[in-house]
Image 1 (cartoon, rainbow, N blue to C red):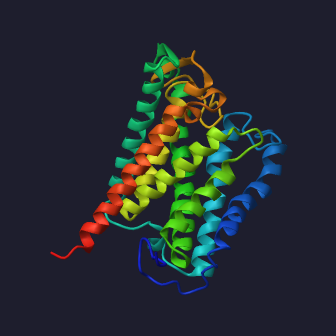
Image 2 (cartoon, rainbow, N blue to C red):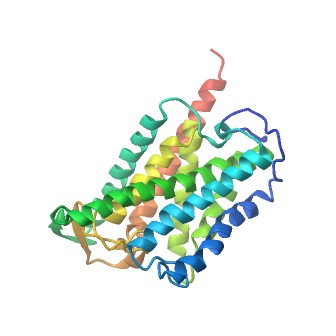
Length: 302
């Protein structure tokens, strides 16, 4: 495979990093805002020494402030150093809001389907329904979290599937871009004691997101999907999302884990379940097959 401009053929007017350097630059773009802001957040008792939110204000600081700073740093690099357009990051195409909202709806549907599958397999016991609607303050928090996860998820997609994937693909090829992007994504989501099953799931999560971006030729849809997935898993069922307990009552139905950790995901939440792993493996394979099939069809003479 040859070097490929994924989303737009527009050339960069500045300096593009070497392909092998891009993953390390990505890690630096994520780490710098965290290092600078973490001491301030700890001073105000928003996060602990590991950077995990201690309260709702800390969670908002993580979602809005830290990820917002990461986005500003990335955009400064793209515009001032690489001097390339945002279209080359996958921020292209028409009906962007509609595409984002469609992805959001798919994210809500797929996260609900995974939780429903775990419940049907005996992993959860359903208890109180729509508890959040009895507490207006909690509904307000849930609304704020929707905006917060939209920011967090969009920044991750712009950074990983937008910038890093396209930067590596331009220097090497698409396959190397997907693999390196997914490995860096796993590395930045790794924490002490993270089980191998969660690392595998994180890799497949990134593979799925890469496949979506490659299939559509933009990242608006996968930005929306990522936001819907994270938000509903976090607020819909009163279960952890990537090890975080958002401390809000269930928007849909309270699910109490009663099955083995392999089924429920344990402290990691549904993303640690083998059913979730199977979903991402199957969905990634299907999207990659669809992408390859469509490109073969375009290449065939009429």
